[in-house]
Length: 197
Ligand code: SF4
Image (cartoon, rainbow, N blue to C red; front, side):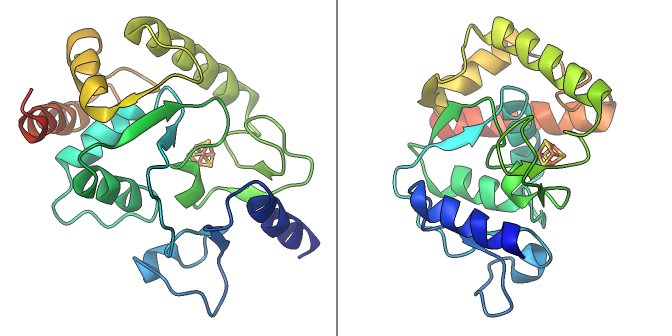
């Protein structure tokens, strides 16, 4: 509980006051979906705040956009809603826990957590092999896209980079596998159509 309160202070103090921790009285969007999560962003007013993503997550955004019809995911639906509703959506490439992690059921408060962000941890962050794999994957896809941590761009500009430089999903970015690949290719096509590119 103490940790939870500390996290609340951290969010407010860091300018994340629009974001709140899950509580029994919190209004929820995908309300059932948000239930049980550490962080509830159901009332978030995003304004022009970019979507924070670690390097390996944009391909997931594309694949879930391809699967958006009927998608009900506490983790991905809020992000896909932003893609649908914000034509000028920008993405910032971050190194720590990101906007996908905020809806992940594996995220947990941990005062000693430090792998991808102070004050949090998750089963992936506690698994050295997973951390190594994610680190390798991030390095690989950053190289393929020609990006660096801290870079920011419109999603409409990221889509052509993915289409050209990362046409096939591999381990760590959602592949390999025909179903995910199919969803990814559909997402790339749908986004290209959305943006007229
Ligand atoms: S498992 Fe951990 S790193 Fe992966 S999305 Fe969930 S909280 Fe984030």
